[in-house]
Structure formats: structure tokens, C-alpha cells
Length: 280
Ligand code: SAM
Image (tube, rainbow, N blue to C red; front, side):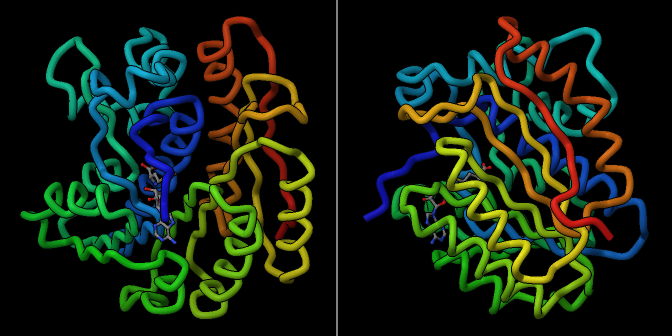
């Protein structure tokens, strides 16, 4: 049984980091005329109501997107991401938050394609109704890891694969590496973007070690933590691991992370980092 619901967490600092990276990768892929595939293995519901019971109960978005979206000195690296948030909220009130599928929907072109997978019995119908009229999108209520075998390589031979599991089960830390390995074997030129929470640093170290063991090269790690690492319960930060990142991404994230950290964490705790796990 799946108990994780992203509606409790939508728009938090981890979503801000993830969706910033996602939108910069999509923007880079659009620099070439050729179409590409956006594959989302763990897509969620698509749209989240921030005044809804779930988001109100945790209030996580108040320390996330609510601190960022109307800043006057917004860095240019955030422009594609914030354009998605603004497109969903007609006016000054922040009522809805776009999940990764809606960010992709807003930024993709007519010729690009979306493959969206979500397993939850409540979230899948919500996602399906969002995309009913979008002929670019194909949806499946299926296991996201299986899609890394079934849907790759795409006919266009270009693509971004976002892997964003809930890490409800400890086995997800191994499953993501196995899934990436299988996807990469089929599509070694694709951009693979993996999100991870920082809960116990040891779990991340082990996952990175497993990733290094795959022999895959060009692996960039981006992290934003709001508190120092801790061995107590709870997420202190999150990161994105990007395989085959667009060449500008490293610099873009180095530019924008200090600003994001300052705005998201007025107390100044935690850290940001951008480094290569495995270079060229
Ligand atoms: N990517 C979304 C976004 O950024 O807006 C959020 C995804 S949320 C962190 C993880 C989602 O994965 C949940 O909606 C959960 O129901 C779904 N899920 C869990 N296990 C799955 C699996 N094996 N295959 C596909 N979806 C799964």
C-alpha cells in the first residue's frame, strides 16, 4: 500500500530545488530544434491546491515557494520555473503549485512528448484529468521503474528522465540505482535527473557509492540543505543527481543556489553544493 501523498509537501524547499533543476534542463533541451521526450517515473497528482487540507496541515510551502515566487530580484535562472508557478496562479495569491508534470507541460513544445507514470489510486486519476486534452502526453498507472526499460530509448533519441520516488521504502535507494543502470543501458545519451532527500547521510553515501560502481560517467550532484545533517528523524535537505547534465547547468546552479538558500533559509543554517560525483 502506498501511503505517501505529495500534496502534504508540494512547494516545499525540496520541490523548489527539484523543479528549478528540471526547468533548466528542459530549457536547455529546447535550444535544439529536435523534439525530445520527458519521462516522469513518479509523476504525482500534477496540481496541488495550497489552500487544501493537506498543504495547510504541514504548511511546508510557506517555507518554500511562498518565499521565492514574488521576489523582485529573482535570478534569471529561476525565470522558467517561476513562469510555470505564475501561469497556474492568475493573480497575486498563491493558490496552486505545479508538480513536475505541469512544469513540463508548460515548458515543452508542440513537438515534444510526455510519458507520465503514477501508481497511487487517488493521485493517478487527478493526473489523468489534468492531461485529458494534451495529445503530447501518454499516461500509465504503472511502476515507474519498469518504464525505464519499457519506454527507453525514445524514438526522438533525446530526452529528460525525472526519477522522483517517495523513498517510503529503504529499498528505493537501491531501486533508483538499478533503474538508472537499466535506463542508461538503453539510452546512454539521455539526461537522467534523480531527486533524493537528505534524511540519513549514510544512505546517500551508499547510494552514491552504488552509482559510482555502475561505471556511468558525467554525474553532477546538486544539494540544498536547510539544516545541518542529523541522525534524528526528518529531512534536513535534498539533492538532485544529474547524469549527462546540459553543459550550462553546473554554472547556473552555482549562480542561483546562494540566492535560493538566502531566501529559503533566513536563519542561514544548512548548506548548498554543486560537485561532480564522476566527471567526463
Ligand atoms: N514528481 C512529482 C513532482 O515533482 O511533482 C512528485 C512525486 S512524489 C515525490 C512520488 C510519487 O511516486 C507519489 O505520488 C507516489 O504515489 C508515486 N509512486 C510511489 N511508488 C511508485 C512506483 N513504483 N511507480 C510509480 N509511482 C510511484
